[in-house]
Image (spheres, rainbow, N blue to C red):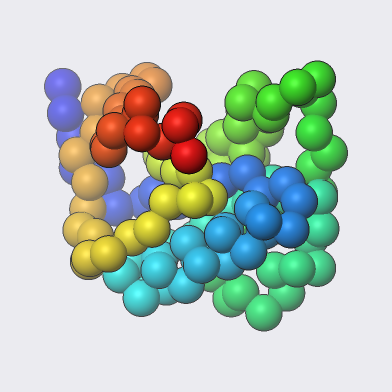
Length: 123
């Protein structure tokens, strides 16, 4: 059964300077288009987010050998320890319009992807 939920946050992984920069852009987008929503960031430099009032950054070092895809589980774990619903969003995502205050969610884990994945991995 789908239920409306107002108590949710976003979470992302931001390792190295490129992704810290992108995560700060994402935080600015969320501040503009989803005011009051928190972005939880797993990062190798917590201090990089000191000026982002809608960010809760925590220290994380990459555990994956080649890529850090599985490291996203740590940001999700942290987010779910604070909120009933966490929306994992890649740091290189941009928000370009207002987000609803309430989302409709199914119980458990739901996954989705917006955009062209083939184009994304070729860049």
